[in-house]
Length: 136
Length: 147
Image 1 (cartoon, helix red, strand yellow):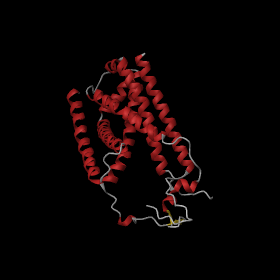
Image 2 (image 1 turned 60 degrees about the horizontal axis):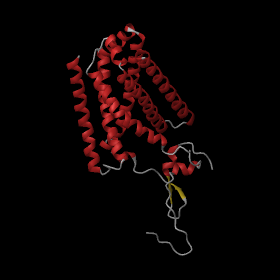
Image 3 (image 1 turned 135 degrees about the horizontal axis):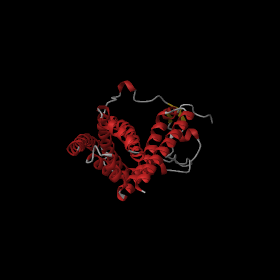
Image 4 (image 1 turned 90 degrees about the horizontal axis):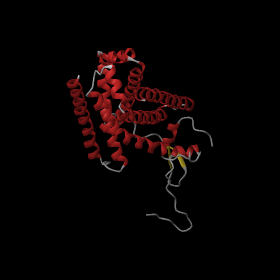
């Protein structure tokens, strides 16, 4: 495998990316957490979104009273709250990756990611509050 | 060490056989590169459908908040969703959602180390496209029957 001649240490292959080598800043301490959580939320969202799509598709054109009844059922309310939290976690994570890939200006990149996170939180809170107001 | 201004520069840095760094041009040249392969087309579609589904999630929030606000606000959402534009939007979101779901399952399989060889990549890619069409059609069939 290696053709090391005496006196010369073997050259080592590195796992570090060229970009990481150039920036020379070391680990950001969070490792693969962001990537891993994207996968975890996607697995949890699989059954939840299929449940939500099928529930809505089979009850299109609900009246207001019917919608209140459906959202207010404990099981539906719990699943809706889980769906809301996981959906906006997954959205914020996905949009962040897209922004980081295409926004090359550091200030713009950070600004867009922060705006995405803030909007995701606000929308999730608004939706959760709506479900709780109806269900509780 | 100076800070790099454009992160794309990093892709141009290679190593000589003695280990020292060298700046090399990007290869292959974009003119010679087929930009419309199924692999790259499905990859960018996964991101685009994710963004379309995000628009759908925002409408879901509108729907829930309107339901909590009262019959009048709820009537507004239902009016929009049953309008021509609303139905078109919902059809787009349904197709995007099924594509993103199926392509997402494909991504999870890749993450687990399965299906990386080119014939399988093309096979699963076609399955994602076919599945998106079938499941979108079935969803709207269900919707129209129960409407």
